Image 1: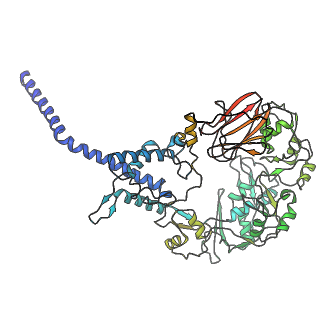
Image 2: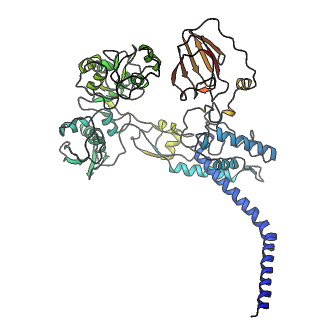
Length: 613
């Protein structure tokens, strides 16, 4: 082929290529582009339906028709599905902001990751697309939506993957909470019960009721006799044998298994709440749990309150039998002094003794930021008690406080030979009728939304009043809305620009009343932070929220407390210290004269004024 023919062929092919592209552009793209847009939107709606089922249905129901949350998502009141361009734009903005920031003062949290949530901006857009997708009216006049149907199907599938377990006492947990097993193991191996066991140590597990013992080799450095007793079911087997409970046990290469059985040898999930009663070995103890009282402990253990009090007078001193028992072990001190240790500050010493930094500093005529030298002796406030730390012994704590082990233990109604633990551990009389605690069907249902004992029983083919063994696994009914949410309310700090109250806007606009210095100084001043205000109490008189004014002398200490929500303390535009979480307290000393405006960065309408002279 000569050169001229090649050129002609190349030109012809180029015309064909250009013509083909032009034809594709003119004919195919107008068809494919809408198809692609529809496919992209359908993908977003499907993802939105799945995200709704995973995150939103707990409060809003499987179809958005309300539950713990209001009926706002899929009805005629809000009409989020209205496709009028102006209404649709407004609805999308409202939903996007609500999902990103939550709603202050309600259970609706901020979902955007930047605000502490679990969804990114693209995922929030998927949910917005889903919530604003149009509702289709059928020829029969019924409202329908494929995407709400899909969200409901996702919800049903998720319900099918959830196992509802009947919670309650197990032999392992009861042995651990009652100190059954560790001391027997330690004594059998002629080792102390407290402290870590060296890696590679061979621990002898004794035979139980004729069953062979064996050797357990410690494979990591932080093993304890408590952990070994638990992992090898040693304490649990002691309880089972003592109470004639049938079980199968096996051990291979350090891994143990234990399965409870009926008398006829059939596997059973666990103990039966309210039905099974247990005896415990003599000398058992009890580790106090949050909410325990002497009355409640006595009732579940089949004991008298007096018998428990008599054995624990030091720990229970000053408590009524109906009072909650503290779960953090503290010790009364024979002398209200503390010997400073290397690395300690006034703040750490105050924390170890459950007192305010300001009170400790004042008791020693020191400033709060004073540096204290190791070996120095500090005077503790009269209400100070020592908070027991992991690894503490009577001798160590006594040395830290300039006393003896005998005097310290005696002050707390014990002897230096008693175990010392950060947990509060009670001595117990002989226990012969402990009542096993556990969930009923109604208790299990309360952990989920739109689930009742009746619906749970029907789904699982049992009677509504059935007593099920601890550990029994149940299926959720299809109509369940998922796990029940927590009760924490949104403080509004994620998007403070949307949580400013009317008084805050007044302040921003300068519409704030002029502050007048009080004629007389106050000697005792405290400031409490509520959801949206500072409330100043001067010499016992509480002032109007966000209108507090006080005159104080130089060196006055003021206690700031967060009663509700998250706050910080800003003095004349400078933030002082870390945030105040709900329940936190901080003492500030006003040493410099002048006028101080007290604000909160998170809530612009919070303010108070101090004059220092």
